[in-house]
Structures are given as C-alpha cells and as structure tokens.
Length: 284
Ligand code: SF4
Image (cartoon, rainbow, N blue to C red; front, side, top):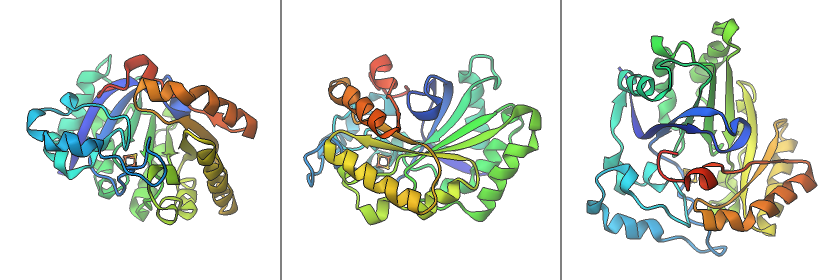
C-alpha cells in the first residue's frame, strides 16, 4: 500500500485561479524542489523568517500552530525538512477516511480536489493512482494539481490521468494543472523555473494555465517575458496574474494594481480569496 507524506488535508473554498470560489478538498503534500526565499524581499535578498521559526521548532506541536510569514514561501512547512515531523506519512486508506470526514455529505458531490504542496508532482506521482482508484473516490469529478511547472509527468502517470478522465463519462471528469511558474522575484533561477517544454506536456493531459505571482512593474515585465517563452513553445492555456501576499497587509497593497495590469494585457486576474476571507490561516 502506498503512502504520501501529508502536510495538510482540509476543506475550504478554492481562493485562486480557475476554480476560485469552488468548495474544495486540499491535499498538501510534503516536499518541494524550490525554496522561493525571494518573495516579499528586495530583489536579490533572501527571507530569513522561517529560520527564526525553525530555531523555535520545539514550541510547535502541530502544523496549525506555526506562525504565518510575510516573506518567502508562505507554505514553508510543507517542504522545509526542519518541519518534516509535523507532516505524517498516511496510507491512501487513511487519506480517504479523512476526506470522507471533512466533506459535507460524506461523499463526493460537487467538491473539487486540489493536490498542492510543496510541489505535488515530485515522487508522489507514483502514489496518486492508488488514492484516486479508491472506491470512495469514485464520485470525484475534478482535480487540480497546483504545481510550479518544473516536474515532468511520468509516462504511466500521464496515461493514468487521461484514462481517469474518460473512464466515467457521466461525471465529465477533468484534470487541471494550475502552474505557478516562478519569476525571479521568487529568488529562483529563470533557467530552472521557466520550463515551457514541461508545461506544454501538461496540456496533453488536461487543462493547464499559468498563474504568476507579481508585486512590481519588473515582475509584470518578467511575466510578459515568460509568457513569450511559453507561447513560443506552443503553450495555449490562459494566463493569470495574482497579487503577492500571504498576509492581508501585503496582499491589499497591490491587488488592484495587479488586476489593472492583467486587464491591460488581456490576461485573467486571480484573487487570493483565502487572504481576505480567512486571513490565510493554515487549513484555509
Ligand atoms: S514552489 Fe511553491 S511550495 Fe515550493 S518553495 Fe516555491 S512557493 Fe513554496
């Protein structure tokens, strides 16, 4: 039986992207290939916020007790090894049991499943078929993988996802890849973060769209440059701009400007509804 290391598993409203406003189960897997220490920092500088939290790790007994950060990756505890003990390894059976407890009717109706991270398309690709094939997952219609767009899909996983969508015709199943490709403001290197050939492959399996987190004019220029590279490689999906800000004070500073920038380019605007609605607390 396969297991997945789970940082969080909760029920909320999807606050971002294509399924904004849709009731969703969030399965946050552990592990990421990036650190994104540049978010919310002057360009070239790295956030140290999570180092201070890690120095006090003994004070925190569960994931939900951890402080929110205003710079760096806002889901740091889902990949930083110093917080790994707060994320249990769970069998598919245990994950499904927990999902059945948290969805309102004890079975899938119109809820959507978000598999997020960390980076959910690392090695866990091998474990998802067993989870999705569980009898209690049969009513699930829509899945979104929230990915940074750097991980190739394994051939057998690609085939599995294509088959998953056509197996049960009445359900109109759909797989979406919400690709938050990391711009230089994240602190990650362009060549490692902008991989159009990887993302184009996602379009062979389901719907894929790009979602850039931006705060400044330079970020928006970087997004334009990235979109050019994706389009040149043949990417057809929509483009979203989303304001930076895991905390309300930062988010509120630039949400309107980001919406205007998206409109100007004919791109879509993605809010972060979890910030104004739930203050981005863990489990939202
Ligand atoms: S890719 Fe996402 S989860 Fe990974 S470090 Fe960056 S923001 Fe965090």
